[in-house]
Length: 155
Image (cartoon, rainbow, N blue to C red; front, side):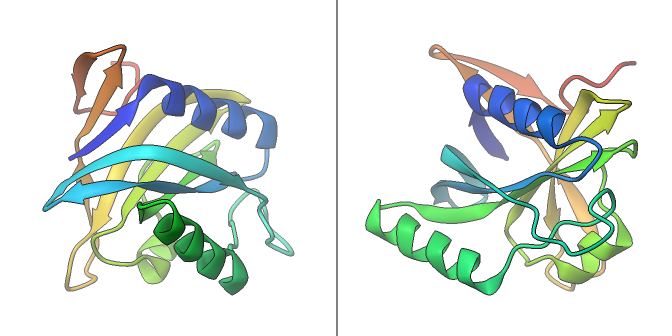
């Protein structure tokens, strides 16, 4: 499970909105206790993909290294990444499976015709066979709200 303050949900939604129709991306920083992860900060990144920015995001090796150094210097861990899926569901693609790291949290937000909608979280299986959905617990002003089926998704 990943705990995420509502202000971070708002920042991810805003980043996805302003990046549309391209994918947005960013790092998640925080602390962990076993399978429980608590996001304390996030850093928006520029999608450095040379082409197909509506289908792919690229984060360069220097950005990964800088994220690790920043996290260590601030007593945090890199917990994972978030990114958007413009006009596609908020579930991992095969490309996501092929490029993900086990244990990391991958938050995906769907942006439908410029409107950020469902947001979900995923963790790659240790055998790299695919992702399992990770519950999101939204924390706001000391009040916690359990989210299991994609925050903002319409039923």
